[in-house]
Length: 257
Image 1: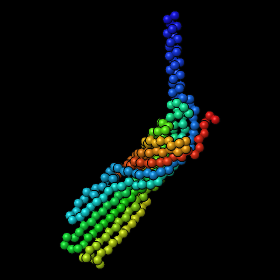
Image 2 (image 1 turned 90 degrees about the horizontal axis):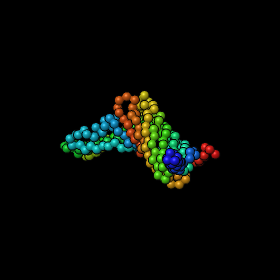
Image 3 (image 1 turned 30 degrees about the vertical axis):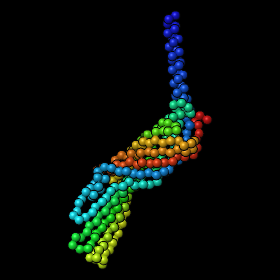
Image 4 (image 1 turned 120 degrees about the vertical axis):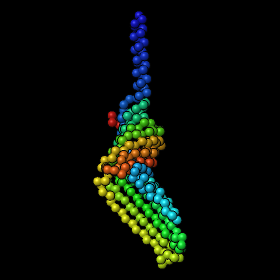
């Protein structure tokens, strides 16, 4: 009798646990969503390559004013993705996996200014220098999402390198009563395509983000796209992109229908 009671109790406990797990987990009933997204991005860079550029700001000259900074590049990004939601209720309704594709940039703006006054003559020299590096990629992220109204996402991104360029602009101006012809100014510009061999063809990145669902069609997310080392050899250079995007659900369909 005692053994039967123990067996019945164990079976009851197992059924209760199994029933609770089923209720909390939900039924695997996958749904596919096709989504497009667009928004603004800012690329922030770091590494030895950036430090070498900032070293210009530390050079001091007598009777000279120097200022400079490295600024992020701001751009528009857009892409598409397919997302599979695991279920319609319980824990599975909170879980989804997506694979997508979008165009992305990385790089920086380097701005440098130098001005000096001739102490014996009325001459002022000023130089403004701007340099912009831009790397173009097609990124393919694979993300796991948890949450419905509020959600977090994380996963790797396989980035295909397309091209890179450097744009330079130098403006020099001389003014003052003792300057030649009363002063003059010149501007020089140059844009170069950088050798593809300098960069990794398929750098691997990582994406971490959070967002909120506005309604059945729209959601908003903020992500950090962390790039791995970009240069193939030497000159360590890495960046991360902060991306604020609006997502629109084009259509959805259930696999089991």
